[in-house]
Length: 274
Image 1 (cartoon, rainbow, N blue to C red):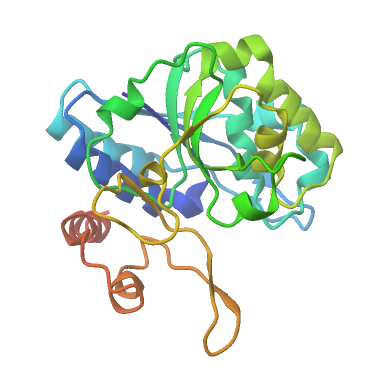
Image 2: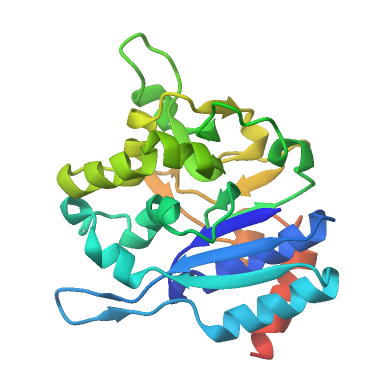
């Protein structure tokens, strides 16, 4: 199975936890790709790519589970700087979230690729989902928990997909130039959720999957991927609420979740020895 993450040094914990959860639930070899880059901001601060320490740690765990598995980082600094998403560089979503839109320009990436956000945890096998027929389909995704009610076609077709879990048909995306069109939109048009909006607006052949493949609200017995997204709370006032998988104490105390204790304990153990 081919897995894609995107991000910088700040999401390494999430990538490691997600990788450990994949190892737990996948029997096939895992080939993980991490698109990353160095990014300098206008104030002189510099965001660093994922570290070799993360790659070594994840590689050791992958090889222990299956010697045929692999992980590699792909430095996209030059590629990104050639055509940056200029209109959205200061949005609340970091430019690293838009890195996946450059995947079609990386020759070594395979045709079938499961993209995962770094705040995803796998709960059970997804073999049938991963191996589904993708003929004539650019990507498969799950409706956005909140966005499906607000962003849809004029005919009220609920098709606004959350981009945290995307099964990509990269060969067909190269053919339709979906990512190239999305990059141009992010370069020229300011949007609230730049790359997610571009993919939803421009794709004509996306497929909607059941919510269990990207559960953004409340986990069920059949949930495959839990996505730790920002949600809304209405008591004692309306406010946003976010807990990420690497905030282990908050996962326990505020979410009341102990489903992932084996994975999170392994993560904490590895962190302690890094």
